[in-house]
Length: 204
Image (cartoon, rainbow, N blue to C red; front, side):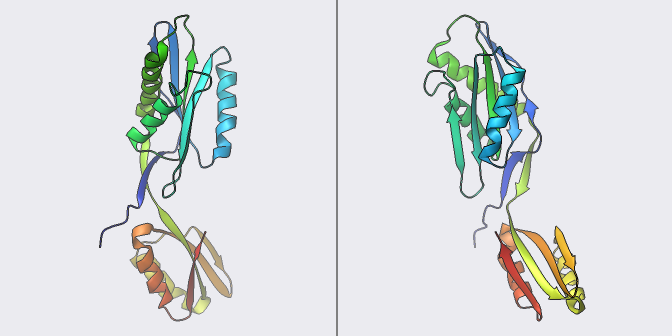
């Protein structure tokens, strides 16, 4: 049986790349971890305040592990000269749940589409190189419900399979919430399903 891909690469902290210059124009690249599209606009607004004399704030983002969503924005630069080259670097580095922004200060000389594509590609590449890229597991989240008297047998499996309890409720009825790596999810689900007096369900 072939293994399911259950890891992805992302970042946990924002980063800033080295300055890239071309014929007087300056390009600053930034990376930000994001978990939803709603986070994009406030980050762009902050960068606009920080770089209030800049001319363009071009960006691309990607979200998701199974179902990928992305967007590339040229922000007034010639069509496809900024957003797509930035998104190309997100793909080249194989990262997701990330926003990459390249801020441009115009230097008085037009760079042409080729020059802009190179500058935005380089700006985003420098920002990604400055980022701390991590590998994370794609998890499925399960909720296990059992009575207090059955705790020992549940805990035995939790320890044996090195599972991580991220939330627990210990009353007459007990509940554990555990993330399980996608590759191991079916096996863990089956083990708890076959355990007498224990119910397991997947959370969205």
